[in-house]
Image 1: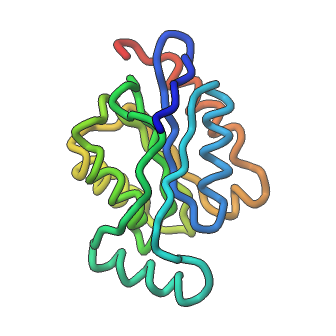
Image 2 (image 1 turned 120 degrees about the vertical axis):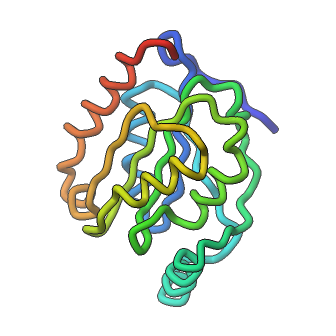
Length: 170
């Protein structure tokens, strides 16, 4: 079933994210709330919880493999902008987000990226996502898991949302 989209002023925006621990979900939901737009969580069919899931995730990420994700409820091609969020695993985008970008890249109009990391260099991860989807992001945002835990990320999300709302040509 494909759900209808909400209008964010004059542009249609979708926030799509994957979250293993809940940090990326929290940021994604905050962004969607500030933009008053649709949101969708990427659902991985591979179990990634617990120590074995963590090890599996790191191994698959290093190998740059894809996974099987559940079909989205929304049609991403109907959005002017898709904001894609990922946790950073071993310095790169998570396997489920890499899979999403690979599967839907031809349907993406414009993109923005956000991530939650544990202190890694996130530029490599953003470069990888840009190369995978073949589109330069209009905005970037990154937080550490610590910033999300202590709620010091809100001002950054506010500025990110403001930058998106000020975009022309979307």
